[in-house]
Amino acid sequence: MGYKKGAEVLPAHLLKEVQKYIDGGLIYIPKKSNRVGWGNLNGSKKLLEKRNEMIYELYKNNTPIDELANMYYLSEETIRKIIYGKKQL
Image (cartoon, rainbow, N blue to C red; front, top):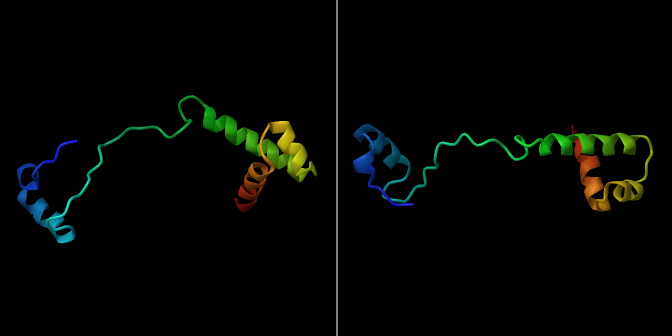
């Protein structure tokens, strides 16, 4: 990443506007991005959402947390986070 002089790349009116907020300091301007969120392309996100919904439904039907942890190969703490996260919705 190289530095560029603001006066060389920004129109004068825009430079003055930026200087109102950060006069003489460094500022990072991120690239424009068309990135897709984690798990959206390969379906991982939907699979985890479906799994978590099943865990919550089983919990509502009185399946104990330790049994859910064994069924899904997760820690009891992770099961609790899933359950309490679903309750908040």
